[in-house]
Length: 153
Image 1 (tube, one colour):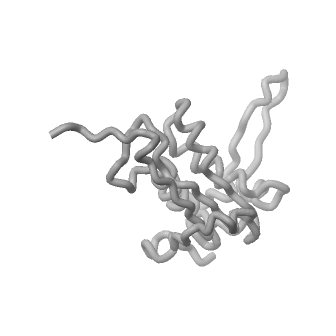
Image 2 (spheres, one colour):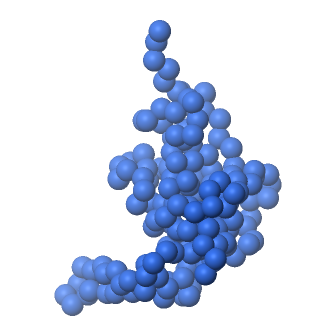
């Protein structure tokens, strides 16, 4: 029996839409990372982009457990005295709340050239509107998968 390796002709990409309202961030990110990578398919090949295109709407209404909303995280701009700090709550209330979800998914993928290519298949929108109606995406209900995927407050 020979090992199956997917070629670009074998790859069938679908469009999936996920509503992030009330869903826990880490659980959402792990499900999306698995879908983007293609690990849910029997034809998964580690060195090929065989995952689906994922659209996430309502990214500003994503939930977090514990005190993760108030925890500070830091980064450095590269200039002297350029250390910055913000909380996830400040980013979600700011101009680009979709960056929290994008970074969570990005950090669940391996850090290589393939994952940078895979990240181009992810589209995240803060509200309910998105310009991908022509692709007729299938709805993936993350809330119904597991009761731990949601958080009320």
